[in-house]
Image 1 (cartoon, rainbow, N blue to C red):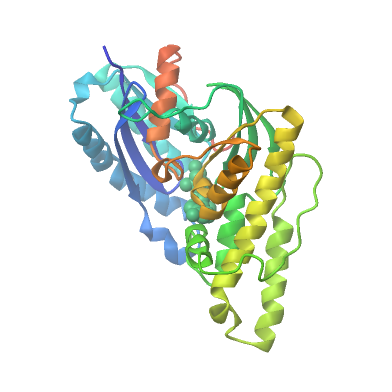
Image 2 (cartoon, helix red, strand yellow):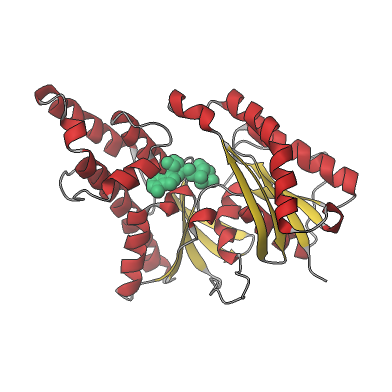
Length: 339
Ligand code: KG4
Ligand code: ZN
């Protein structure tokens, strides 16, 4: 008998629901919230309200597209944290009510672990090569930048992290400085495709060990543009492609340098990337190049499983279901993780 799990993700500004049959995704519906673009960032209260509007239709559509009846679901998994509390509460409340009404287990999932476990989603043919334990995962999103040593599905140790901005934040802030709307990361990627990554140089973060720092890079970018704009008011418009390619190159080379240091220190050569920034084309190319050079075996997630989605919550839920690791109705969401 297959196991069907409903996954729900509502930690930030995407409302998503997915249905998984064992480790194969049947549906993965995502409602993006456009309401934040003009504010230059996610507005928590607006995000929470949009989740409330979206959640029922998104879940309805996920179950419909999966081609099953809700009575066939074995469990409901949801993001407990980290994220925006008002957003998490919408998914959590729905999941609790659904578990109670359907009399099925409730499974809490950590959003950052789920980004990593997305690598275990199998395709319909069962032909995808999945990572084996242990492996390293660079988890890079709007709120986190971590190098994680993954020893088992739920045995993960953060061995490096940012001491200030996350990589996604560095992309978004650089984009904002150039006057691009939120979230700017995908736009930097898009415009940078036609630019020269070595056109401009910005200060390199100098921080020991496996940790990251991106705030100096942002400041260097800001001061560089401020000086150029004094001489040429159209500097950004005329050099957009080179600016995007260069800042992207700075962020990606900082990311891969520490990742390769982690490979050297641990001797582990299976390396995955996860989280929104893993959608970045320069990072994906850098990982493929390192693989071609024989330095690592790279695991790069499909685009649809890179940025926030409920498929990753469903696969994490599946592994917890196999362990019968269930939550009770008294639990509440958390905004920050302890790791
Ligand atoms: O994982 P995610 O969807 O949400 C969080 O959990 O934060 O990550 C969102 C972050 C944003 O900062 C966004 O700008 C960045 O991922 N991002 C990208 C790209 N696609 C998304 N950054 C650079 N290049 C991309 N193609
Ligand atoms: Zn995320």
